[in-house]
Length: 115
Length: 113
Image 1 (cartoon, helix red, strand yellow):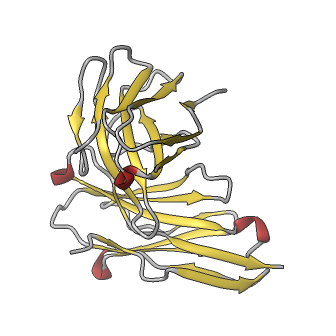
Image 2 (image 1 turned 90 degrees about the vertical axis):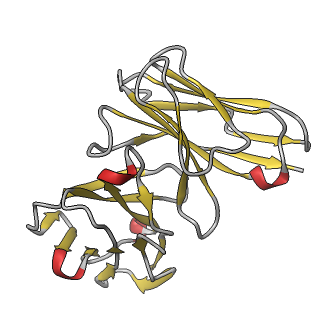
């Protein structure tokens, strides 16, 4: 069973629209960490955010915001006023006690921002 | 700042050939990882290391070997390449383990024909 599900394979929006990328996870641990990474067309993976399971406060960083809800096991990522430079594949990942040092990755959501 | 550097960036191998991918990090990180990325599957951990001289298997270790003789270097070897190993390989490092961010190299695109 998928432990990290990114159900949206590809999203396409017009520049300046808001867009939300969904991430649903599954774990039995009480202590775990969630991550978002960005992979632009150039290929490298760029860290965006880390959240631990005890911190349910939403995070905002410029046009980016993250909504962590333990009740629904979701850690969604919203880009406000999207820009062409936001076009990338975005990955959600989970780190749990049982996985030792492994990050469990979602399949990624390809975001296309049209000018 | 170099960060994590992978060499080579591209390689084409014939089935049965061997090769070594080199990963070097200059951040004095303890933990290093090798992942492979295949379309629609996210990243999968091949092997990892929690310090100099240590290695451990990840999710998909078969067909690969690794070595961490120096803290800054993590080598990934393919002894007898197979077409199923065609993938993009990423090296990463982190200061600590699972609760810290990982820094990634630019990737190596390997094609086995």
